[in-house]
Length: 205
Image (tube, rainbow, N blue to C red; front, side):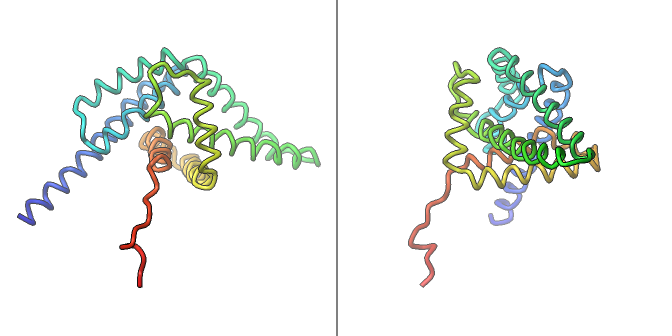
C-alpha cells in the first residue's frame, strides 16, 4: 500500500509538471502577437491554480476560454503595459551607459519606478484568479494596489525573484521558452497563497 501511494504521488506530481509545461508552451505561441502577450499571461494565471491542484479537467479548454475573456477585457491595457515596459527597459539601458550627473538622477528615478511597476504587476497576477468576470483594468489595479499595500515585503521579494530570473534569461535566452510565463505566474501564485497560522503544535516547549 505504501509503495502504491508513493507511485500515485509521483504520477500526480509528473502530471502537474506536464500540465504546467503545456500551459507554458501554449502561452509562448499565443504571446508572439504583441496584443496577445498580457491576455495570454492573464489567462495562464487564471488557470494555474487548477493545473497545480489537478481538481478540474479540460485545462486547455479553460485556458482558451480565459484567454478570450482576458483579450476582451484587457487587450488595450495590455498593449499599454507592453509599451510602458519597453520604455522603462530602454530608459534604464540608455542611462546605465550614459555619462554625467543626470545618469545618477535618472537611474534613481527609473529603477524604483520599475520595481514598483513589477510589484503592481505581480500583485495584479496574484488577485486575478479571484477577479470577477466583469473586472476591468481599473478594478484590477485597485485590487492589486490593495494587495501590495497589505503585503509589501513578500511582493518586494517576488520582484527580486523576477529581476534575478530576467538577468539569467538575458544570459541564457532559452530560459524564456521554459519560464517566460510560468516564472511570473508561479511567483504571483505563491504570493497569493494564504499565510499559514501558527498553532500550538508549531510552538516548541
